[in-house]
Length: 226
Image (cartoon, rainbow, N blue to C red):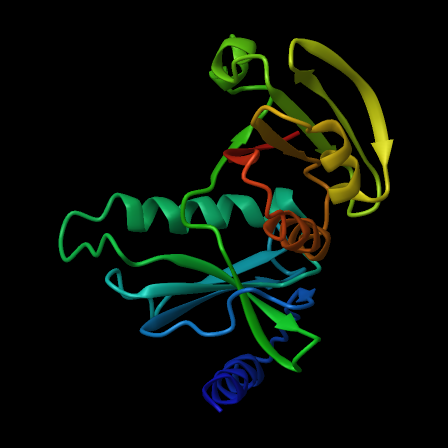
């Protein structure tokens, strides 16, 4: 009932401002309940220079934040606003709540209600400007796989596992392919996303990655936009 109420509030907010926000869709979300929340909205708005409009009027630093991003936006459009919200909470000096988290709000089609993906610890960076890649073999102890996502159906893997260079490998079944590569030692997955990727596809990919249960596979908290 709580989530139906939230949907109604979202609809009313959109209608009163003559705006429509289309939430990205996922299935079988691991998180379906978040309490003590504040909402933020990133609208698709063609009248704006970057086609986006951020509304964050009701955000309270000490609460969990539900970030509602229109699925039609590209990462190039949405990520700057998402980073702005992250920095606002991370840099708060007063009334800071270390337990408060950030979530993307989604439409979980498997239950006909809301589902949520946490992104509190995610750090977004432009791949071509980040120094994070310097000496990456040393950082990951020669056990890493880079995943390059063009969209939610086309991607390829490359990296080093057990001192063996993995050739570029295009795949359609993400989890199956990774499990075939990772046999014994722990491996870090480093995700790279094309900036023209739609937010709907980004959430679809994130949802798939969240279902990896192997204790040998670690997903790096740094995500690179190229």
